[in-house]
Length: 78
Image (cartoon, rainbow, N blue to C red; front, side, top):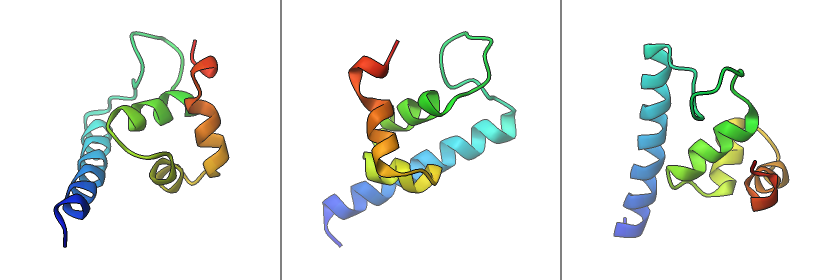
């Protein structure tokens, strides 16, 4: 395996560990200090901020790739 492949695998594992720890801790807040329930956009941006590619985010969320790309476009952010 190349260093680049190992880095990509490591990044994905870190995301899964982070999500598991958040679930165990009962932390449902992925955005700022908002009172709304977590939305798809917040989760997608959270995963993107962790360094995942849109293709990987779509696989994790079980959503179409185009939907993930739409949620990550700058004009969709508020």
